[in-house]
Image (cartoon, rainbow, N blue to C red):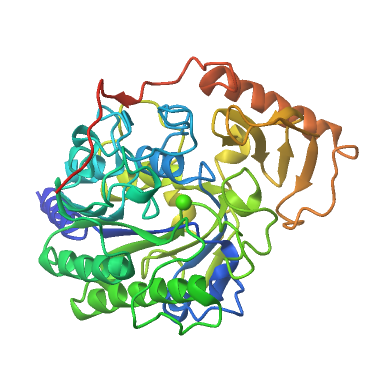
Length: 463
Ligand SMILES: [Ca+2]
């Protein structure tokens, strides 16, 4: 009887202690753009404090160097190719406005997993997984949505006959067009704080995929930040995103929710260096949109006081694809029945000294659109020998040699080591072949791929 009472009490308190989860996901933001990851240019005191109170993950990867596929993987715990979101319906790298394609509503998203465990859910910011009514966040497990259905630079003037004015949405309705881009971060932050206040008494999941710095050479920010940083419009935007993080942290503190909230702070892909004042992926090589370390190895901070170590650094190989199964495990939700690529890494989160990554056995695969370009396992990343790298499916082919780097100890990839380590090359090549069979490669479908969502005729989102 005593045991029964104890178990009952324990399960009631375990329910009450279900952590809130906040994922802050910035856009086209490089590893070297945060003070706590080495920036001397940007002032990011709030994210720096988040890192001091939490753990920095230094081998944390997104599953693609561009928006749509990267977000599809975060939401589903799968490689973009598995859920067929690696190319757009028109053969491009990301979905454009009025796209026929979207993330299949049959896919189980992170929001649906958490909703099934009793969470209030909201997406605030940039969605970019389909702009047709059946593909919106509210059809993928989010109770509510505030923000843009796609990138802020996809404005009507670029394709006046096809694209609508940039729509700002609430739920499934366009409430403003064109959206006021200067105040997107400010308004999304205010919206996020309101959501936290409204759901303070129940477990909530806030997905905050900020629209900035975004894809333009001139990121937008409000008058409070415009012209204030030492790094032009990009720096202004970074500092406003840091302010936003501080507002979220302050709201949690005020509502006494900080201790029971897991915050994950990361980016959807690395900075795209269009001009000297654009962001930094230091110390990594390369630029956003491809399969370089700079494009796919992201700054990541996780804070959960008393659970995730404070002031720690963990270099275990982890990915945005791990977050769905990890959240499910942490809150006691049912894992999706469909095949996932991500792993439950709660053991790594809850123990800073645990650097054993499940990806070290499986391999982690770097795809650019439909092409497998590299594989990492353990310390090593192998760039596969390619006849051509495909910027778009029709672009001029650029041959690419095989290269092997120890990306744990030689993070800047200065020492090519394939000749010295033929056994590593062989092992990673075998892993790559397993990936090709399962999720495919250029001109080669994989046996484990699933269908994306597709509509016969797409319609523009209008007020
Ligand atoms: Ca992006």
